[in-house]
Image 1 (spheres, helix red, strand yellow):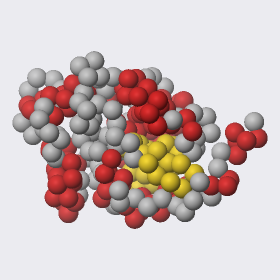
Image 2 (cartoon, helix red, strand yellow):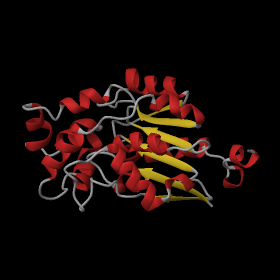
Image 3 (cartoon, rainbow, N blue to C red):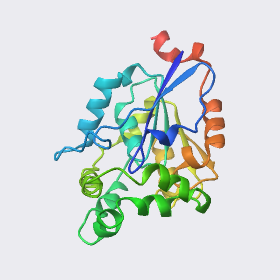
Image 4 (cartoon, rainbow, N blue to C red):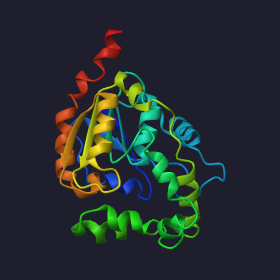
Length: 237
């Protein structure tokens, strides 16, 4: 059976993937991304630390597919090994993250974090008909969440050339056509060009796996081979 590891981003959680149906013969696991769950966020949080924790806890190098949304997409790219398939949604792999770090600056962080604790990202990032379900599922992360989000945003400094590194992998980009935070143009197209991935636009905002699970699942099924054919490049080597 093929294994898919799906990594959520900020400010969602593992439930982001619960509406996605994976192809027959594949098993989906949805880890809690370290630093984003009830166990808290270290003061020295970094993407490298989160990637190491995921690799040690979930043996991500043994997965057939790494799937990531938002910050989870960066972690998927960092963890990807040659021959693994990679699915990205609503993320960036280059200097676009410098704009995200700006949300942690004084004044900006009051609107994005300390006043609304991430609800701005949810409320304004989706199509109107999905707003209430997203807020119900992901708006409450417990005490201290606003400050934790700010610290995580400050640490969003992905390694250089992640997109080029992914040229060793088959990459699918399943993206919300109306994503306001990571627009298809220029963000998705820039990621697709960097990693030579295939871009599929879905009728959704930023949270495509939640907002358009049917289209997302169809794109995933068309992208993945039957499990008996997976990672043939590794076998041949």
